[in-house]
Amino acid sequence: METFEWIINELLDLIWNTPESLPFMVVVLLSFGIFITIRLGFIQITRFSHGLKVVSGHYDDPNDEGDINHFQALSTALSATVGIGNIAGVALAIHFGGPGALFWMWITAVLGMAIKFTEVTLAQEYRITNEDGSVSGGPMYYIEKGLGPNWKWLAIAFSTAAAICAFLTGNAVQANTVADVMLTDFQIPKALTGLITAGLVGAVILGGIKRIGYVTSRLVPFMATLYVLGGLIILIINYDAVIPSFVQIVTSAFNPQAGLLGVGSGAFIFTLSYGVQRGLFSNEAGQGSAPIAHSAAKTDQPVREGVVALLEPFIDTLIVCTITGLVIVATGAWDMYHSATVFPTEDPVSYVVNEGEDPSILYFEDGMPVNGDMLRYNVSVDTMFTDTEESVLFNGRIEGVDNNPVIYQDNDVQLEALYGGVVENGAPLTSRAFEIGLSPLTGGGGLIVTIAVLLFAVSTSISWSYYGDRAAQYLFGFKSIFWYRLTFVGMHFLGAITALTTVWAFGDVMLGLMAFFNIIALFALSGVVVKITRKYFDNTDI
Image (tube, rainbow, N blue to C red; front, side, top):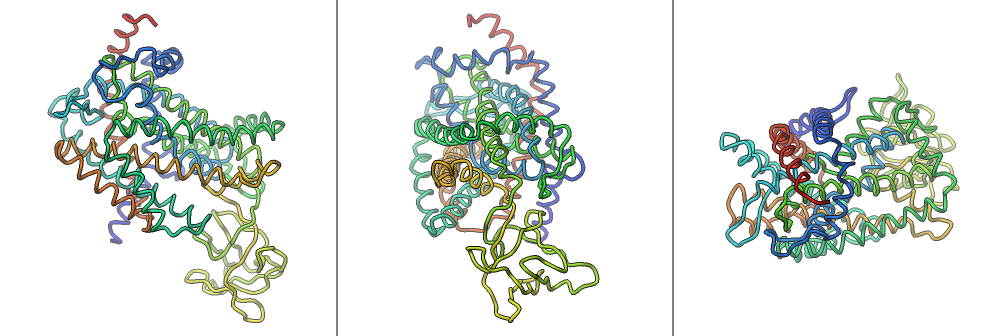
Protein backbone atom coordinates (compact mmCIF):
# COMPACT_ATOMS: atom_id res chain seq x y z
CA MET A 1 0.00 0.00 0.00
CA GLU A 2 2.85 2.38 0.79
CA THR A 3 4.39 1.68 -2.62
CA PHE A 4 1.03 2.31 -4.30
CA GLU A 5 0.63 5.63 -2.45
CA TRP A 6 4.17 6.66 -3.43
CA ILE A 7 3.49 5.90 -7.10
CA ILE A 8 0.20 7.82 -7.03
CA ASN A 9 1.76 10.86 -5.38
CA GLU A 10 4.66 10.87 -7.85
CA LEU A 11 2.24 10.72 -10.78
CA LEU A 12 0.10 13.45 -9.22
CA ASP A 13 3.15 15.72 -8.88
CA LEU A 14 4.09 15.08 -12.50
CA ILE A 15 0.62 15.64 -13.95
CA TRP A 16 -1.02 18.35 -11.84
CA ASN A 17 1.01 19.74 -8.96
CA THR A 18 2.80 23.07 -8.92
CA PRO A 19 6.49 23.24 -7.96
CA GLU A 20 8.40 26.11 -9.60
CA SER A 21 7.03 25.56 -13.11
CA LEU A 22 3.73 24.89 -14.85
CA PRO A 23 2.46 21.31 -14.39
CA PHE A 24 2.59 19.03 -17.42
CA MET A 25 -1.16 18.81 -18.07
CA VAL A 26 -1.62 22.57 -17.64
CA VAL A 27 0.91 23.14 -20.43
CA VAL A 28 -0.72 20.52 -22.66
CA LEU A 29 -4.27 21.85 -22.23
CA LEU A 30 -3.28 25.50 -22.59
CA SER A 31 -1.26 24.75 -25.71
CA PHE A 32 -4.16 22.98 -27.38
CA GLY A 33 -6.59 25.71 -26.29
CA ILE A 34 -4.50 28.39 -27.99
CA PHE A 35 -3.95 26.21 -31.08
CA ILE A 36 -7.61 25.32 -31.65
CA THR A 37 -8.86 28.83 -30.83
CA ILE A 38 -6.73 30.26 -33.61
CA ARG A 39 -7.48 27.44 -36.04
CA LEU A 40 -11.26 27.82 -35.55
CA GLY A 41 -11.13 31.60 -35.88
CA PHE A 42 -12.03 32.39 -32.24
CA ILE A 43 -15.27 30.43 -32.50
CA GLN A 44 -16.06 30.98 -28.81
CA ILE A 45 -16.62 34.65 -29.66
CA THR A 46 -17.91 34.60 -33.23
CA ARG A 47 -20.46 31.78 -32.69
CA PHE A 48 -21.42 32.41 -29.06
CA SER A 49 -24.83 33.84 -30.02
CA HIS A 50 -25.53 30.81 -32.22
CA GLY A 51 -24.96 28.57 -29.19
CA LEU A 52 -27.57 30.54 -27.25
CA LYS A 53 -30.00 30.18 -30.15
CA VAL A 54 -29.52 26.41 -30.32
CA VAL A 55 -29.84 25.78 -26.58
CA SER A 56 -33.02 27.87 -26.45
CA GLY A 57 -34.67 25.21 -28.62
CA HIS A 58 -34.73 27.04 -31.94
CA TYR A 59 -33.39 24.01 -33.83
CA ASP A 60 -34.91 21.22 -31.72
CA ASP A 61 -36.42 18.37 -33.72
CA PRO A 62 -37.88 15.45 -31.71
CA ASN A 63 -37.39 13.20 -34.74
CA ASP A 64 -33.62 13.64 -34.74
CA GLU A 65 -31.54 10.71 -33.55
CA GLY A 66 -30.55 10.95 -29.89
CA ASP A 67 -31.94 10.59 -26.37
CA ILE A 68 -32.26 14.13 -24.93
CA ASN A 69 -32.62 17.68 -26.23
CA HIS A 70 -29.87 20.31 -26.40
CA PHE A 71 -30.79 21.95 -23.09
CA GLN A 72 -30.89 18.62 -21.24
CA ALA A 73 -27.49 17.68 -22.67
CA LEU A 74 -26.06 21.01 -21.53
CA SER A 75 -27.64 20.58 -18.09
CA THR A 76 -26.26 17.05 -17.71
CA ALA A 77 -22.74 18.22 -18.59
CA LEU A 78 -23.06 21.32 -16.40
CA SER A 79 -24.26 19.28 -13.43
CA ALA A 80 -20.86 17.55 -13.52
CA THR A 81 -18.81 20.72 -14.05
CA VAL A 82 -20.71 23.16 -11.81
CA GLY A 83 -19.74 21.58 -8.54
CA ILE A 84 -17.26 21.58 -5.70
CA GLY A 85 -14.66 23.23 -7.95
CA ASN A 86 -16.80 26.37 -8.12
CA ILE A 87 -16.96 26.57 -4.33
CA ALA A 88 -13.73 25.05 -3.03
CA GLY A 89 -11.58 25.29 -6.16
CA VAL A 90 -11.83 29.06 -6.50
CA ALA A 91 -11.03 29.53 -2.82
CA LEU A 92 -8.06 27.19 -3.17
CA ALA A 93 -6.72 29.15 -6.15
CA ILE A 94 -7.04 32.49 -4.33
CA HIS A 95 -5.49 31.14 -1.13
CA PHE A 96 -2.34 29.84 -2.83
CA GLY A 97 -2.15 32.18 -5.82
CA GLY A 98 -3.79 35.34 -4.49
CA PRO A 99 -6.70 37.23 -6.16
CA GLY A 100 -4.85 37.30 -9.49
CA ALA A 101 -5.43 33.56 -9.85
CA LEU A 102 -9.06 34.33 -10.76
CA PHE A 103 -7.89 36.25 -13.85
CA TRP A 104 -6.05 33.17 -15.12
CA MET A 105 -9.17 31.11 -14.47
CA TRP A 106 -10.96 33.49 -16.87
CA ILE A 107 -8.30 33.01 -19.55
CA THR A 108 -8.58 29.25 -19.12
CA ALA A 109 -12.36 29.46 -19.55
CA VAL A 110 -12.10 31.41 -22.80
CA LEU A 111 -9.69 28.86 -24.26
CA GLY A 112 -11.76 26.05 -22.77
CA MET A 113 -14.79 27.15 -24.76
CA ALA A 114 -13.00 26.30 -28.02
CA ILE A 115 -11.76 22.99 -26.57
CA LYS A 116 -15.30 22.01 -25.50
CA PHE A 117 -16.61 22.86 -28.96
CA THR A 118 -13.98 20.62 -30.54
CA GLU A 119 -14.45 17.53 -28.40
CA VAL A 120 -18.25 17.67 -28.42
CA THR A 121 -18.45 18.17 -32.20
CA LEU A 122 -16.25 15.09 -32.64
CA ALA A 123 -18.35 13.11 -30.16
CA GLN A 124 -21.48 13.85 -32.19
CA GLU A 125 -19.76 13.07 -35.49
CA TYR A 126 -18.58 9.61 -34.41
CA ARG A 127 -21.29 8.47 -31.97
CA ILE A 128 -22.95 5.04 -32.33
CA THR A 129 -26.50 3.72 -31.96
CA ASN A 130 -26.96 0.95 -29.38
CA GLU A 131 -29.08 -2.18 -29.65
CA ASP A 132 -31.91 -0.55 -27.65
CA GLY A 133 -32.00 2.52 -29.90
CA SER A 134 -30.08 4.80 -27.50
CA VAL A 135 -26.81 6.43 -28.52
CA SER A 136 -23.29 6.43 -27.10
CA GLY A 137 -20.37 8.66 -27.88
CA GLY A 138 -17.27 10.28 -26.50
CA PRO A 139 -13.49 10.22 -26.93
CA MET A 140 -13.30 6.41 -27.08
CA TYR A 141 -15.46 6.41 -30.20
CA TYR A 142 -13.84 9.30 -32.03
CA ILE A 143 -10.42 7.87 -31.23
CA GLU A 144 -11.26 4.46 -32.70
CA LYS A 145 -13.44 5.61 -35.62
CA GLY A 146 -11.64 8.85 -36.38
CA LEU A 147 -8.03 7.70 -36.02
CA GLY A 148 -8.59 4.10 -37.09
CA PRO A 149 -8.36 0.64 -35.46
CA ASN A 150 -4.62 0.96 -34.89
CA TRP A 151 -5.45 3.56 -32.23
CA LYS A 152 -7.95 1.42 -30.34
CA TRP A 153 -5.40 0.97 -27.56
CA LEU A 154 -5.73 4.71 -26.86
CA ALA A 155 -9.53 4.43 -26.76
CA ILE A 156 -9.24 1.55 -24.28
CA ALA A 157 -6.79 3.53 -22.15
CA PHE A 158 -9.13 6.54 -22.08
CA SER A 159 -12.18 4.39 -21.21
CA THR A 160 -10.31 2.65 -18.39
CA ALA A 161 -9.23 5.97 -16.90
CA ALA A 162 -12.77 7.37 -17.29
CA ALA A 163 -14.45 4.38 -15.63
CA ILE A 164 -12.08 4.58 -12.65
CA CYS A 165 -12.27 8.37 -12.40
CA ALA A 166 -16.09 8.23 -12.41
CA PHE A 167 -16.00 5.86 -9.42
CA LEU A 168 -13.56 8.05 -7.50
CA THR A 169 -13.39 11.80 -8.29
CA GLY A 170 -16.88 11.89 -9.82
CA ASN A 171 -18.54 9.84 -7.09
CA ALA A 172 -16.75 8.74 -3.90
CA VAL A 173 -15.04 12.11 -3.38
CA GLN A 174 -18.34 13.95 -3.92
CA ALA A 175 -20.10 11.71 -1.38
CA ASN A 176 -17.31 12.21 1.13
CA THR A 177 -17.47 16.00 0.76
CA VAL A 178 -21.22 16.04 1.44
CA ALA A 179 -20.89 13.66 4.40
CA ASP A 180 -18.15 15.83 5.95
CA VAL A 181 -20.21 19.00 5.56
CA MET A 182 -23.39 17.44 7.02
CA LEU A 183 -21.46 16.03 9.98
CA THR A 184 -19.72 19.35 10.68
CA ASP A 185 -22.75 21.60 10.24
CA PHE A 186 -25.61 19.41 11.49
CA GLN A 187 -23.93 16.48 13.32
CA ILE A 188 -25.59 14.01 10.92
CA PRO A 189 -23.66 10.69 10.89
CA LYS A 190 -21.75 10.02 7.69
CA ALA A 191 -23.42 6.64 7.21
CA LEU A 192 -26.88 8.22 7.27
CA THR A 193 -25.85 10.93 4.80
CA GLY A 194 -24.30 8.26 2.58
CA LEU A 195 -27.47 6.17 2.60
CA ILE A 196 -29.63 9.16 1.66
CA THR A 197 -27.42 10.52 -1.11
CA ALA A 198 -26.69 7.04 -2.50
CA GLY A 199 -30.44 6.44 -2.61
CA LEU A 200 -31.01 9.70 -4.47
CA VAL A 201 -28.21 9.01 -6.94
CA GLY A 202 -29.41 5.43 -7.49
CA ALA A 203 -33.02 6.47 -8.07
CA VAL A 204 -31.89 8.78 -10.86
CA ILE A 205 -29.08 6.89 -12.60
CA LEU A 206 -30.80 3.49 -12.72
CA GLY A 207 -33.36 5.16 -15.01
CA GLY A 208 -30.70 5.94 -17.63
CA ILE A 209 -29.77 9.09 -19.53
CA LYS A 210 -33.35 10.21 -20.15
CA ARG A 211 -34.07 10.35 -16.41
CA ILE A 212 -30.65 11.88 -15.76
CA GLY A 213 -31.37 14.56 -18.37
CA TYR A 214 -34.84 15.18 -16.91
CA VAL A 215 -33.53 15.61 -13.35
CA THR A 216 -30.45 17.69 -14.20
CA SER A 217 -32.40 20.03 -16.50
CA ARG A 218 -34.42 21.01 -13.41
CA LEU A 219 -31.80 20.69 -10.69
CA VAL A 220 -28.96 22.61 -12.38
CA PRO A 221 -30.89 25.85 -13.04
CA PHE A 222 -32.24 25.79 -9.47
CA MET A 223 -28.92 25.19 -7.72
CA ALA A 224 -26.99 27.60 -9.91
CA THR A 225 -29.61 30.33 -9.48
CA LEU A 226 -29.66 29.89 -5.69
CA TYR A 227 -25.89 30.15 -5.42
CA VAL A 228 -25.42 32.97 -7.93
CA LEU A 229 -28.31 34.98 -6.45
CA GLY A 230 -26.76 34.75 -2.99
CA GLY A 231 -23.43 35.92 -4.40
CA LEU A 232 -25.01 38.81 -6.33
CA ILE A 233 -26.83 40.02 -3.20
CA ILE A 234 -23.47 40.12 -1.40
CA LEU A 235 -21.88 42.09 -4.23
CA ILE A 236 -24.80 44.55 -4.22
CA ILE A 237 -24.42 45.03 -0.47
CA ASN A 238 -20.66 45.53 -0.95
CA TYR A 239 -21.03 47.48 -4.20
CA ASP A 240 -18.26 49.90 -3.29
CA ALA A 241 -15.75 47.00 -3.13
CA VAL A 242 -16.63 45.39 -6.47
CA ILE A 243 -14.63 47.66 -8.81
CA PRO A 244 -11.58 47.72 -6.50
CA SER A 245 -11.80 43.90 -6.36
CA PHE A 246 -11.77 43.66 -10.17
CA VAL A 247 -8.76 46.00 -10.27
CA GLN A 248 -6.97 43.94 -7.63
CA ILE A 249 -7.67 40.70 -9.52
CA VAL A 250 -6.33 42.04 -12.82
CA THR A 251 -3.28 43.85 -11.46
CA SER A 252 -2.23 41.03 -9.16
CA ALA A 253 -2.52 38.56 -12.05
CA PHE A 254 0.70 40.04 -13.46
CA ASN A 255 2.23 41.52 -10.31
CA PRO A 256 1.06 39.28 -7.45
CA GLN A 257 1.54 40.42 -3.87
CA ALA A 258 1.22 38.23 -0.81
CA GLY A 259 -1.59 39.24 1.53
CA LEU A 260 -1.03 40.92 4.87
CA LEU A 261 -1.19 37.57 6.63
CA GLY A 262 1.01 35.83 4.07
CA VAL A 263 -1.83 34.40 1.99
CA GLY A 264 -0.74 33.83 -1.63
CA SER A 265 2.89 33.26 -2.51
CA GLY A 266 3.44 36.59 -4.25
CA ALA A 267 5.12 34.65 -7.09
CA PHE A 268 3.81 35.00 -10.65
CA ILE A 269 4.31 31.33 -11.54
CA PHE A 270 2.15 30.22 -8.59
CA THR A 271 -0.60 32.73 -9.41
CA LEU A 272 -0.67 31.66 -13.05
CA SER A 273 -0.43 27.94 -12.34
CA TYR A 274 -3.05 27.75 -9.59
CA GLY A 275 -5.46 29.87 -11.63
CA VAL A 276 -5.08 27.75 -14.76
CA GLN A 277 -5.12 24.48 -12.87
CA ARG A 278 -8.26 25.27 -10.86
CA GLY A 279 -9.94 26.66 -13.98
CA LEU A 280 -9.31 23.42 -15.84
CA PHE A 281 -10.55 21.34 -12.92
CA SER A 282 -13.69 23.45 -12.69
CA ASN A 283 -14.86 23.57 -16.32
CA GLU A 284 -13.33 20.19 -17.34
CA ALA A 285 -12.42 21.44 -20.83
CA GLY A 286 -10.33 18.83 -22.63
CA GLN A 287 -10.88 16.09 -20.07
CA GLY A 288 -13.20 14.16 -22.37
CA SER A 289 -16.10 13.87 -19.94
CA ALA A 290 -18.60 16.39 -21.34
CA PRO A 291 -18.52 14.91 -24.89
CA ILE A 292 -20.03 11.72 -23.46
CA ALA A 293 -23.10 13.63 -22.22
CA HIS A 294 -23.44 15.83 -25.30
CA SER A 295 -23.26 12.85 -27.66
CA ALA A 296 -26.73 11.86 -26.44
CA ALA A 297 -28.32 15.08 -27.73
CA LYS A 298 -30.99 14.92 -30.43
CA THR A 299 -29.44 16.50 -33.52
CA ASP A 300 -28.29 15.65 -37.01
CA GLN A 301 -25.66 18.40 -36.99
CA PRO A 302 -22.54 17.76 -34.84
CA VAL A 303 -21.53 21.44 -34.89
CA ARG A 304 -24.92 22.41 -33.47
CA GLU A 305 -24.17 20.54 -30.25
CA GLY A 306 -20.60 21.83 -30.29
CA VAL A 307 -21.76 25.45 -30.03
CA VAL A 308 -24.02 24.44 -27.13
CA ALA A 309 -21.02 22.90 -25.34
CA LEU A 310 -18.89 26.04 -25.68
CA LEU A 311 -21.38 27.74 -23.35
CA GLU A 312 -20.28 25.47 -20.48
CA PRO A 313 -16.98 27.13 -19.50
CA PHE A 314 -18.69 30.52 -19.84
CA ILE A 315 -21.41 29.54 -17.35
CA ASP A 316 -19.19 27.50 -15.06
CA THR A 317 -16.10 29.71 -14.84
CA LEU A 318 -16.91 33.17 -16.18
CA ILE A 319 -20.16 33.38 -14.20
CA VAL A 320 -20.26 30.97 -11.24
CA CYS A 321 -16.54 30.97 -10.40
CA THR A 322 -16.37 34.75 -10.86
CA ILE A 323 -19.22 35.21 -8.39
CA THR A 324 -17.36 33.04 -5.85
CA GLY A 325 -14.05 34.84 -6.40
CA LEU A 326 -15.52 38.33 -6.19
CA VAL A 327 -17.35 37.49 -2.96
CA ILE A 328 -14.12 36.16 -1.42
CA VAL A 329 -12.08 39.19 -2.49
CA ALA A 330 -14.71 41.90 -1.95
CA THR A 331 -15.46 40.76 1.61
CA GLY A 332 -11.74 40.44 2.39
CA ALA A 333 -12.35 36.90 3.67
CA TRP A 334 -9.32 35.54 1.81
CA ASP A 335 -6.82 37.51 3.92
CA MET A 336 -8.29 37.71 7.41
CA TYR A 337 -8.43 35.58 10.53
CA HIS A 338 -11.61 33.63 11.23
CA SER A 339 -12.59 32.25 14.64
CA ALA A 340 -12.34 28.46 14.70
CA THR A 341 -11.23 25.43 16.62
CA VAL A 342 -7.53 25.50 15.85
CA PHE A 343 -6.55 22.27 17.54
CA PRO A 344 -7.42 19.45 17.24
CA THR A 345 -8.78 19.72 13.68
CA GLU A 346 -8.81 17.73 10.46
CA ASP A 347 -7.32 20.72 8.64
CA PRO A 348 -3.53 20.68 8.16
CA VAL A 349 -1.78 22.24 11.18
CA SER A 350 2.00 22.22 11.35
CA TYR A 351 4.48 23.28 14.01
CA VAL A 352 7.86 24.95 13.58
CA VAL A 353 10.14 24.86 16.65
CA ASN A 354 13.23 27.07 16.76
CA GLU A 355 16.51 25.38 15.91
CA GLY A 356 18.39 24.05 18.93
CA GLU A 357 15.25 23.58 21.07
CA ASP A 358 13.27 20.45 21.87
CA PRO A 359 11.29 19.80 18.65
CA SER A 360 8.55 17.96 20.54
CA ILE A 361 7.33 20.91 22.66
CA LEU A 362 5.83 24.24 21.56
CA TYR A 363 5.40 26.76 24.42
CA PHE A 364 2.78 29.54 24.58
CA GLU A 365 2.58 32.77 26.56
CA ASP A 366 -0.49 35.00 26.39
CA GLY A 367 -1.82 32.92 23.51
CA MET A 368 1.27 33.18 21.28
CA PRO A 369 4.02 30.59 20.65
CA VAL A 370 7.37 31.69 22.08
CA ASN A 371 9.79 29.08 20.77
CA GLY A 372 8.49 28.61 17.26
CA ASP A 373 5.32 28.97 15.21
CA MET A 374 2.00 27.23 14.61
CA LEU A 375 0.80 27.16 11.01
CA ARG A 376 -2.44 26.30 9.23
CA TYR A 377 -2.30 26.14 5.43
CA ASN A 378 1.27 27.49 5.83
CA VAL A 379 0.01 30.71 7.46
CA SER A 380 0.62 31.56 11.14
CA VAL A 381 -2.43 31.16 13.35
CA ASP A 382 -3.61 34.04 15.50
CA THR A 383 -3.75 34.27 19.29
CA MET A 384 -4.81 31.03 21.02
CA PHE A 385 -7.56 30.84 23.65
CA THR A 386 -8.84 28.05 25.87
CA ASP A 387 -12.55 28.84 25.39
CA THR A 388 -14.88 29.26 22.41
CA GLU A 389 -15.68 32.83 23.47
CA GLU A 390 -11.95 33.59 23.10
CA SER A 391 -11.74 35.34 26.45
CA VAL A 392 -9.07 33.27 28.25
CA LEU A 393 -5.57 33.39 26.73
CA PHE A 394 -3.69 30.11 26.47
CA ASN A 395 -0.57 29.80 28.63
CA GLY A 396 1.02 26.38 28.43
CA ARG A 397 2.49 23.98 25.92
CA ILE A 398 1.71 21.46 23.21
CA GLU A 399 3.75 18.28 23.64
CA GLY A 400 4.54 15.74 20.95
CA VAL A 401 3.88 18.25 18.19
CA ASP A 402 4.82 15.75 15.48
CA ASN A 403 3.05 12.73 16.97
CA ASN A 404 -0.36 12.85 18.70
CA PRO A 405 0.02 16.31 20.25
CA VAL A 406 -1.37 16.90 23.74
CA ILE A 407 -2.32 20.33 25.18
CA TYR A 408 -1.33 21.33 28.72
CA GLN A 409 -1.97 24.55 30.63
CA ASP A 410 0.79 25.90 32.87
CA ASN A 411 -0.79 24.06 35.81
CA ASP A 412 -0.42 20.80 33.83
CA VAL A 413 -4.17 20.47 33.36
CA GLN A 414 -4.81 18.79 30.02
CA LEU A 415 -7.12 20.59 27.57
CA GLU A 416 -9.22 19.09 24.81
CA ALA A 417 -9.01 21.99 22.34
CA LEU A 418 -7.64 25.44 21.56
CA TYR A 419 -9.51 28.23 19.81
CA GLY A 420 -8.47 31.32 17.93
CA GLY A 421 -8.08 32.94 14.55
CA VAL A 422 -7.13 30.98 11.44
CA VAL A 423 -6.89 31.64 7.72
CA GLU A 424 -9.46 29.47 5.93
CA ASN A 425 -9.14 27.66 2.61
CA GLY A 426 -11.36 25.65 0.28
CA ALA A 427 -15.12 25.44 0.85
CA PRO A 428 -14.87 26.79 4.44
CA LEU A 429 -13.32 30.01 3.06
CA THR A 430 -16.20 30.45 0.61
CA SER A 431 -18.65 29.75 3.43
CA ARG A 432 -17.01 32.40 5.64
CA ALA A 433 -17.11 34.91 2.79
CA PHE A 434 -20.86 34.34 2.31
CA GLU A 435 -21.43 34.68 6.07
CA ILE A 436 -19.55 37.99 6.15
CA GLY A 437 -21.24 39.25 3.00
CA LEU A 438 -24.78 38.47 4.10
CA SER A 439 -24.28 39.44 7.76
CA PRO A 440 -26.13 42.79 7.28
CA LEU A 441 -29.22 40.82 6.27
CA THR A 442 -28.95 37.40 7.90
CA GLY A 443 -26.52 35.00 9.47
CA GLY A 444 -27.40 32.28 6.97
CA GLY A 445 -24.79 32.95 4.33
CA GLY A 446 -22.88 29.81 5.21
CA LEU A 447 -26.10 27.80 4.84
CA ILE A 448 -26.28 28.78 1.17
CA VAL A 449 -22.83 27.29 0.63
CA THR A 450 -23.81 24.15 2.56
CA ILE A 451 -26.91 23.65 0.39
CA ALA A 452 -24.86 24.35 -2.73
CA VAL A 453 -22.23 21.76 -1.72
CA LEU A 454 -25.00 19.19 -1.21
CA LEU A 455 -26.73 19.87 -4.53
CA PHE A 456 -23.53 20.33 -6.53
CA ALA A 457 -21.96 17.12 -5.23
CA VAL A 458 -25.05 14.96 -5.78
CA SER A 459 -25.59 16.33 -9.29
CA THR A 460 -21.92 15.72 -10.10
CA SER A 461 -22.26 12.07 -9.06
CA ILE A 462 -25.38 11.69 -11.19
CA SER A 463 -23.67 12.95 -14.34
CA TRP A 464 -20.39 11.11 -13.76
CA SER A 465 -22.33 7.85 -13.45
CA TYR A 466 -23.31 8.26 -17.09
CA TYR A 467 -19.72 9.02 -18.10
CA GLY A 468 -18.57 5.90 -16.30
CA ASP A 469 -21.23 3.55 -17.63
CA ARG A 470 -20.51 4.63 -21.23
CA ALA A 471 -16.83 3.85 -20.60
CA ALA A 472 -17.81 0.47 -19.15
CA GLN A 473 -20.01 -0.20 -22.17
CA TYR A 474 -17.09 0.46 -24.50
CA LEU A 475 -14.82 -1.86 -22.53
CA PHE A 476 -17.19 -4.71 -21.64
CA GLY A 477 -20.32 -4.37 -23.78
CA PHE A 478 -23.82 -3.00 -23.43
CA LYS A 479 -24.91 -5.51 -20.74
CA SER A 480 -22.25 -4.21 -18.33
CA ILE A 481 -24.04 -0.86 -17.91
CA PHE A 482 -26.57 -2.05 -15.30
CA TRP A 483 -23.89 -3.67 -13.15
CA TYR A 484 -21.66 -0.61 -13.41
CA ARG A 485 -24.50 1.63 -12.21
CA LEU A 486 -25.27 -0.69 -9.31
CA THR A 487 -21.62 -0.77 -8.24
CA PHE A 488 -21.47 3.02 -8.66
CA VAL A 489 -24.24 3.46 -6.07
CA GLY A 490 -22.42 1.17 -3.63
CA MET A 491 -19.19 3.10 -4.15
CA HIS A 492 -21.05 6.32 -3.39
CA PHE A 493 -22.00 5.00 0.05
CA LEU A 494 -18.47 3.75 0.73
CA GLY A 495 -17.08 7.13 -0.27
CA ALA A 496 -19.28 8.83 2.32
CA ILE A 497 -17.95 6.76 5.23
CA THR A 498 -14.30 6.22 4.23
CA ALA A 499 -11.21 8.44 4.49
CA LEU A 500 -10.26 9.35 0.93
CA THR A 501 -6.82 10.96 0.89
CA THR A 502 -5.28 8.38 -1.46
CA VAL A 503 -8.55 7.89 -3.35
CA TRP A 504 -8.70 11.62 -4.09
CA ALA A 505 -5.13 11.60 -5.41
CA PHE A 506 -5.75 8.44 -7.47
CA GLY A 507 -8.87 10.01 -8.99
CA ASP A 508 -6.94 13.15 -9.93
CA VAL A 509 -4.28 11.03 -11.64
CA MET A 510 -6.98 9.23 -13.67
CA LEU A 511 -8.49 12.62 -14.54
CA GLY A 512 -5.13 13.80 -15.82
CA LEU A 513 -4.68 10.64 -17.90
CA MET A 514 -8.18 11.07 -19.37
CA ALA A 515 -7.25 14.58 -20.48
CA PHE A 516 -3.88 13.51 -21.89
CA PHE A 517 -5.34 10.65 -23.96
CA ASN A 518 -8.15 12.92 -25.15
CA ILE A 519 -5.89 15.80 -26.18
CA ILE A 520 -3.80 13.45 -28.36
CA ALA A 521 -6.94 12.64 -30.33
CA LEU A 522 -8.11 16.27 -30.45
CA PHE A 523 -4.82 17.40 -31.95
CA ALA A 524 -4.93 14.60 -34.52
CA LEU A 525 -8.57 15.23 -35.47
CA SER A 526 -8.50 19.04 -35.39
CA GLY A 527 -8.56 19.15 -39.19
CA VAL A 528 -11.79 17.13 -39.21
CA VAL A 529 -13.42 19.62 -36.84
CA VAL A 530 -12.35 22.60 -38.95
CA LYS A 531 -13.80 20.94 -42.08
CA ILE A 532 -17.12 20.06 -40.41
CA THR A 533 -17.42 23.53 -38.91
CA ARG A 534 -16.82 25.38 -42.16
CA LYS A 535 -19.29 23.18 -44.01
CA TYR A 536 -21.99 23.74 -41.36
CA PHE A 537 -21.73 27.52 -41.23
CA ASP A 538 -21.43 27.81 -45.00
CA ASN A 539 -24.76 25.98 -45.39
CA THR A 540 -26.67 27.23 -42.36
CA ASP A 541 -28.87 30.28 -42.12
CA ILE A 542 -28.07 31.59 -38.62
